[in-house]
Image (cartoon, rainbow, N blue to C red):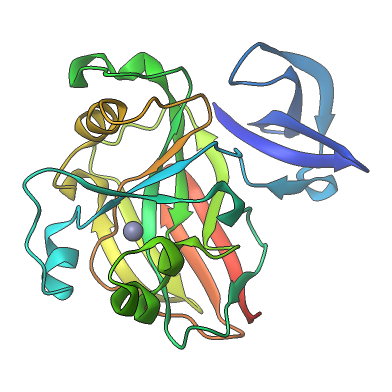
Length: 254
Ligand code: ZN
């Protein structure tokens, strides 16, 4: 099932599932209790929103060997994690805003894990029931500020720096070799496979859950393959994950 969050009518934001004829709206939330409603809306009549608003976004640094190499960094011995604020989340087609403080705002196409049930100190072999599904993410990064600050909160934390979507795929298998690409204006900049992560999804969810309790809707960004690069005003950036879909966002100067 592909779960979306939509602005269906004026002020009426709800979850639904993608069906052949359109979006089948839900009563309730897929993170708690829900059921399918009778209403199916054509895709042209709804606005897709970020599929989830997390309480926190935990991101993983240097989780692809080729990206660690391009950053002149070693692959870490255990996952290196950092936080992005929930206020950075935007949905498909919403603009990424380049802040005036930065002259170098990069794309990082990533697979995002969406937590479905509370996870606290979960063993890798037990993470499955805690995951609702997977979506695409762009871990937008002000590279110059990330470097000059020496820690990453500002460089990774601006509003609009966490596009998510278009849907949460509940059947996606990250251990299969699914292509992950990031394109700017139709030109491929990043290309990798979800099977190439240094630490896989089960290990990452377990590791993070041993540090902080993961709540329903929380998101883990699993790292980016090589090819990160700048985005400029007027660009259209697409993160595509095979089987999940395409997350497209335009870029503007704030
Ligand atoms: Zn990243």
